[in-house]
Length: 489
Image (cartoon, rainbow, N blue to C red; front, side, top):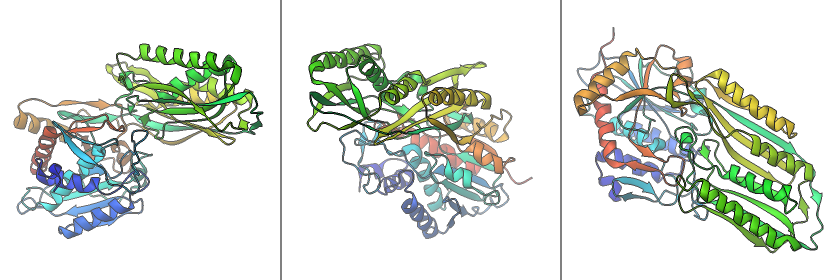
């Protein structure tokens, strides 16, 4: 038995550990979906996979609670696959190496998947425990939330019967979320003809930025952390514009909703300019260290490593300059805070992925805003910027935010329960991350919804951790909510 399975509440941690042993990154959820269906049926619940790939389970009421309204427990089954640069882990085939670190559960050199595995595990614990007092329950475990909320978008209007929905995907215990930002993916693409390069008297270097904190591009975008793609753009801007380097390829980031921790590029330089080039790289490194010394860790690196094999192909001068200029100019980070709530981010953008090689260039960003007009505004900034660089720009996967309902009967009940259980009122508010409630609410406009969860830090990074004591609080709170769901009108 893994020590994690002995933590409290045991049923939740046992199920969570089981989930960590099944590879389930976004895009590869078939195995975990099948596992969840088998689990539900083994414990006497009905379960099926809908047309969108979501797992839907139903469990009848315990005796004496048959007259209660139906409650939906909702979480997502996929996890963000992030790892440290040199770690050999394969998210599609390998189990996670999870361990206890003081009061935290973490995974070695990878994301933990507590976002949103803990929510799934709590729902599983409720499925298998017939002593819990509750009315009729539906459990919705969605597919590919992290890469575009695919399961929520595909959910049909007739799949659920519940009046109340408990989203188990928030990450700060003691808070109840009642609203979130909307988002849109910004895709910039260009094909170009590579030019031939005469390698005589040229040197090749591999530039690498790594060791940054990264983070969740919604809830941690306000922390001022460095974006590896932006730092690489500044480095390349300095080197290319001074004729010290010629760009061959560039790769940075791999998830639209994760602040890029790493970025790398291959450049050619004149052999006679070697010392000047290396001095420039060292200067850039020292500038970045100074700028982020109070935010980033001491693990930050900007390195220039010689490459023995000299490339014979590179980007045309106008193409490399246009793309570098566009990445430099494009907005990254917080654009505006909510005027009525100055501590809440309203609009932001994460310049998430750069993939340039072999005559193809792609830049992907994720814009978020609780205001559709501001989401369009920041999208238009990218359209303008990258169109001037000659790139085709498309917007995909747009969704509106989840608008708060401060008069929600469910939230009022939850707040009273929390105060009675734990001696203090929960914080009720909105967040800048994307939650599935707004999308689900399009097909279920009368469903009363709220989101909450245990404390999870640094999701979408290898530093992700779940605070052990808060899982017990989260689960106890969930059971008390289910016990107090009101009778049908």
